[in-house]
Image 1 (cartoon, rainbow, N blue to C red):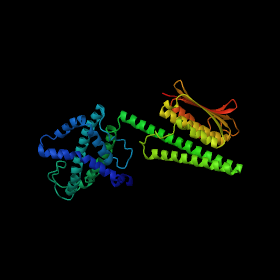
Image 2 (cartoon, rainbow, N blue to C red):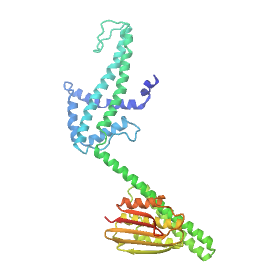
Image 3 (cartoon, rainbow, N blue to C red):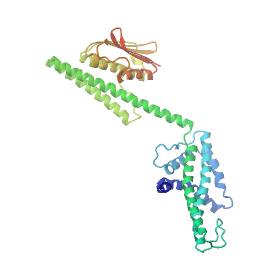
Length: 385
């Protein structure tokens, strides 16, 4: 019994009833104008639904607020009609909503009256003017029938509310084009989150690695001059990391913020200087017009070099490093090599190495990380188009 009465305690039941009542306001006004033609409002809804794209948005907003209050993903679109299929579905929805409105208004108006008349007939009063109850004389048996209209009213209110909601999701639900657009938007959001995670991993990880290496080298050296240089390198690297962090947080705060401020391959010198300041002997070779590399490719290339140098400092320490950046034949080729040391993760291990491969793959390229002829190698090729 408690389960059957539960819908009566939900506010959604009554907001859905209000949604069902609203169309009858139009019919009621029209009946004052021409009661002999009650079908005119239903006929007028055909061109309204077919010719006015904004009607779908208005109906969607009403349905979302009254039929599914509080649900973020209600399955009801609030966009205007974009195709004739959307317009036809909107017109069909308007006609269906009108029919449901007539049914629920008839039920809520006459069923309570019928219950009262049945009760009166059982108590000795003969009801008059009720076409649903042609009673000639009072009888006690009508007391047994009096609860039936109340039960029917409950079924109509709850049942038609559920039916109205299901039809709204069906007829006002997202079109295939809207579903594809929503899927693309969600995919872009996931890709953006993944990119931001990689940005934080690469920039902050690089800065912390440099700081740890510099601090350890300064402690071991015991030379005030070397310690001063190490502190300068830590300060510079930390300042660059803070700039990267502020930029990434700015992207999170402002989804439309441009990415033009992100570092590119033309800024790679600061990475090389940071690695050299940490004790690594970096030998760099740049060939080809770096300034002609497209922005996305140049930015991801910068991050690949950054993560590669971070791995060198973290796992191999201050060792000789060869960095080769070449732009030729419509592609960007990146290679970072260092002597293979114990404890270096194998190919496929670590989120940084996985991030390098993901960066290359997202731009249509490929990357290889692993041992090669006694060295640890990171090699990536990314097409420029």
